[in-house]
Image (cartoon, rainbow, N blue to C red; front, side, top):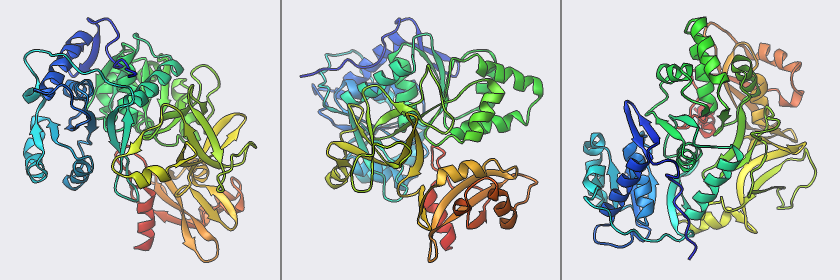
Length: 496
């Protein structure tokens, strides 16, 4: 049996691990609490034997206690989105065959009926904590550890199952690549049902002995205040968060903006991920704070696979190079490896970081792999050794007039238009073009934009075949919980 040490609590036991509002929790305190939770969730059993334990908890001491407590007891942790609708929860709980649900007391009333109908025991952390610790099982590295649900833009979300070995690889790779240390302090405001918040921030932070400040949401004034005080030296967010910060700067005084930007400038690292970072935003952030955003590429099934370097050139519009221990290869539509630079192909991944299976869905699991390579569905090109994402093969690659176009590339250009606040580009079925490039645009307050004027503007900035054939003005772009635009819903707007 290959046992992997649990990736937590390696720092000084008296050191603060978590800050939650006015409360501070040391590594020793949390470690002891987790052991009591593990003892309680085991009861008279010696091992949970991969029992699925779900939890409906915001970022908190209880969240950390539950996740790690389930792992130590030999169960499969199933973190749920606290913003989920009941119908979504029904799918998650049923799909995962969950037996017990740990939830904050504030959620119990809304969850009782669902749990009763599914015969799931509804508990709080306090209900589980034992009075005394007990001997815990040895956990083989190949055992299942966690199930996260994909966003499910076209079909119902699938349960992505990772082993302890998978989680170990995902964490330790980033610890090395991004030079985490016990001196790091980072805010965590991203959702904790997603790989970004769970692995990149929380788990890396706890493994390295750092301090993680927990927020239930992105509270700009509160977080900005801590930034001006120099509390944080690492900051990780999705592009939408950086956009919101820039917009916030426009509502406050110049002196305050300078203090916040100085706080960012003093940090050792700012990272952007989970969605493409527009070049315009990359440049804006650099000009404001002096920080060169580190963009990386990952997904629920692989954790992080590609990253711009911590030390070295970070390129705008590129996601960098394969991380240590991760194999990346581009393949064409005939499953042949692509060796020439600047030729696009699907990214496929191998490594210990890759997930085990889609829970209870053998067909989906098998169809996602080719000769041991996980097929990401993302299309990229390699330019001077750096991967540049062109988009999802099914959504962001537009085949128009015989050309294969990147929606992300077109979006990046359109975002530089002075009247455009947000934009999403898709291909819409068209008798003439096959797919017609269509731009959905949110206009800045006080601005106007017509299709004719946009077409003229694009003429000097992109090839004629890339210019949108249609412009649709919308009040807001549909987005999921991580801030990603849900492009299939844009297609629905066209059909209405």
